Length: 608
Image 1 (cartoon, rainbow, N blue to C red):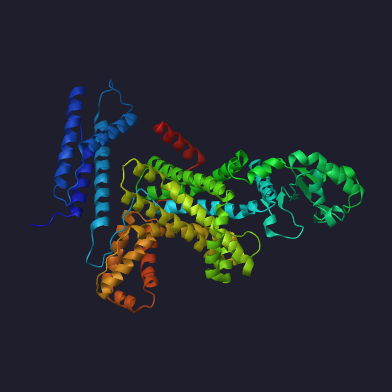
Image 2 (cartoon, rainbow, N blue to C red):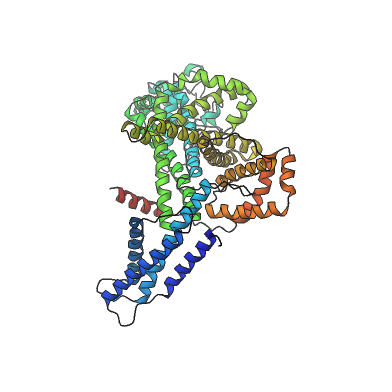
């Protein structure tokens, strides 16, 4: 007696689905008779499906609750399509529509179950690697979102370490005014990080600006002149004085002080004292507000961090949502379902990034950053000046630095990473921590979940840093754009890989040479499946093509064993097969901002 295979089952399921398109109501039957006949067709189809399932292993039991949900959905969709109401007479087209969708959705549920089952439990003894499992939780998308979120938070922390200095409120004012101008629609950029002598702190709409936030207007102006205010004006750009930005509450006294300097001839090329009003620029914040921004726990500080956090989290939301949307679509979800999955995923990572940004910034201002100086400097000393320079220059927008300066900056960058990664892990684990306190999960499960989350966060952060450094090192002339792309790819791959590696239990046993090579190919396929965002169907096709290749040439595995770099050899086998497969992918039309807004509204309405 021949064995009933999954291929046989698929053929029989497809025959049943096709048969629904030929259904029709008995002639001259009334509406009540048609409704009874419709239910009879449903019950017959359920019975036929169950007969097929009973011949498969393991048996997949579609619950009556699940079937009822599918039936209601199919019936409702047919009602919309045919404008059906209770007063409307049923016709055979309606019957075919309901039954076809009901059969098709059940078939997809069954197919997904067996695809997931085989990906998790089938260990093949032939040349077929185990199929990597797919999941609604897209670790690559989450890692990418966390990577870009932590990149923004670490950059913010790195830039704001100056807030802890004696004149930290001046740097805080510079950043806050720049943020205000950006949000007001101006083209604003920080320049002062390059530490150029007598250079501008920032530029707004082509105007060069030097920020001076001092306790009095006259002191703000005196600091702009040599010899403690008695010499010449220091800040010139193309032969013209830069604008001097002062606290809004010190503006009038600063203008008066500048007029006196002009009358004394201390500003080259300027003789009219009224020009002081064009040189002195009124800041958006007072002196006290600037001081409070640099402190922890103040309204001004929290507001500044929240606005920055919202900007950073928007990028995190976007990257996570777009990757999730694409992978959900490739896995067979319809547009609206994929959009909802993407929105949920984006909100999870974006929300975590927002909270991380605020909490990490507040802790840094409270002194946590300073407490990590010793450990970060010890790591950098171990790395050495060359590695430190490669790392820090991947994140700089101005000129490269080397030696002691690079090591000091790299230590600052690492401190930001420590804080951001730690807070991200706690924020993402907060639900699990709450469940543990409520007795819904055990302490062991909590430890496992937090460890898994920490590995994803650490992997995405390390992947971003390594990817950014590598991208910038390979293409130094292109600037940080390639570094950013490298960081995004690195965070997706490394974060997903770290998550999977942490959850995998390794068994030690002796293997034949061919089995060892297949194990490497399997591992490489798992890694590449994350990088290429492969779905279950694509992986099945790739494995089938891989088997054909290995069967046609028995020397491939022997050549691989003899190779000095077996993982590279495995990549050279797999990449062409993978790239051939993904050419068949549907082109993804990116959802518009309105699409995401509408999806968010629907999601919030469901939660209300």
